[in-house]
Amino acid sequence: MPIATCRLIGLLCLLPALALAAKNDRPHGGGPDRPAVEPAKADAPQVATDFHCEQPANAVESMVCQDDGLTRLDNRLEKVWAQALAKSEQAGGSARGKLLAEQKRWVKSLKDCMKDDDPHMCMGDTYILRISQLQAAWGLAPALTPLRYLCRGQNDATILATFYRTRPATAKLERGSALAIVHQGMSGSGARYQGQGVEFWIKGRDASVNWRGESLECSTEPTP
Image: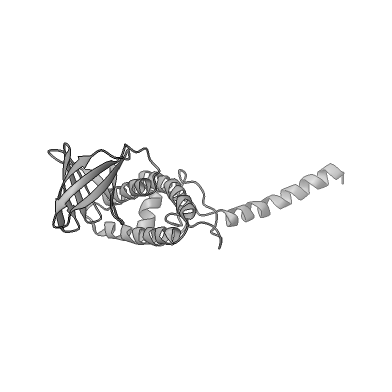
């Protein structure tokens, strides 16, 4: 038999085996719009959700993997999460461990959306808020000049507010060593931000603040 024919037959015989190997080695992914994720290694950075769309483990994974809009949000979260994780590693100390624990709690909280009247909308809102929260907490989005608020209440305080151009708009509030990430909602007058037990309502140069049960009346002062 000619050498060229032998080589061709050998290649044809190998094709089924190669196809089977490729199928078995295919990484977990989330559909046509979701990029493949390599299998996790012991020393590899954790991913944001670790959903396995080839074999969804629960109703949350099925909803995210089967819906194009949620899949795109999940992809967006993965990118922001990778940036936040890198920043936490640069920060050192316990920053990375705290971020990982926080993300695990967030993933578990997605299950609460299945009890909502509109699980799909709840899931989308939850993703959007998490993305903007990570962007604000780790400085991953454009920010306006911080404003310093002098606050009067049961305990006088100073709050440094940094506003980020996220969707929805986000503010990082720093009060001493305490930190809160709040998101802008609908309000008839002024800009109203809420989140993590804090309500921050801006009216011109003033702001009314409910800081985890403590009421404060604040006014801005120029930052140094």
